[in-house]
Length: 130
Image (cartoon, rainbow, N blue to C red):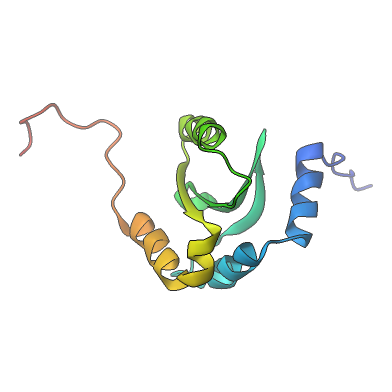
């Protein structure tokens, strides 16, 4: 007999609701990121990373893309970004207006972040290996 998966948490349920009620900016960016449109990379939208829900994330690259509208505050976003960074995620933030007016530039910025080499986790001391 198959085992039922656990009941969804409140975070998962909220993420599901957010997927249904996308903003115009989220819809526009999702059109650029979905189905591997960005070099075949798989992005997820409204992906739970408790206690937060990322707007978009690429798990393979440990990259989160957040869209900020008028409801966002610099201080709460800084706390959120710091937490996600400590969990090993890179976070990119864009204003909704930028996504709506310059979607290709936003996609280029995401691509540039993905294409940039990750820093080595154990860099050699200054002056060695150069």
